[in-house]
Structure formats: C-alpha cells, structure tokens
Length: 104
Image (cartoon, rainbow, N blue to C red; front, top):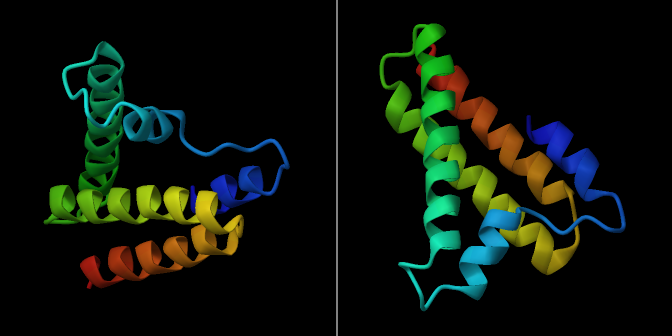
C-alpha cells in the first residue's frame, strides 16, 4: 500500500490526499459537509484496515490500524512539505515493523 502511494507521489502532478488537503483548508469549520465526508472516508479506511488485520489473526487490530493510518497520513503531509516520496516508503517500513511485531 505504501509503495503504491510512493509511486504515485513521484508523479509531478501528485497533490497528496484530497481529504487531508480539504481538512487543512477547512480546519476552522469542523461542521462543514466536506469535513464530515473526509472524516467518514478516513474512518471507513481505518475500519477496513482493521478488518484485514483481524482476518490475519492480529489481536490488537484496531489499535494497529490506527497506528498505520497515522503513519500514512503523516507521510502524506510530510511529502507535501518536502516533495520526497521516500518519506512514504519510510512510513511503510515502520508500518511493516509494527505489523510484524503484532504477529509475534
């Protein structure tokens, strides 16, 4: 997942996550409909990831999904600032370590 995002981030027209960009623009309007849509999307993705981790037999799948989402969203933000997709790859490496540790 992280490698695919890093690959996309190498394209000169890549603009990151539209939901995060919208949240940054509308940070002072938490009730805005676009903020609600973005929040639902992000929560839906986290729940999907949690379910996949649960399918893999990981006991603390909800917590791990939250950690992976933090890594992904942090990587999106950092790449927008530095324009270096290596940050997404590094976040992927960290996520892989978290998942591997949870499997032990």
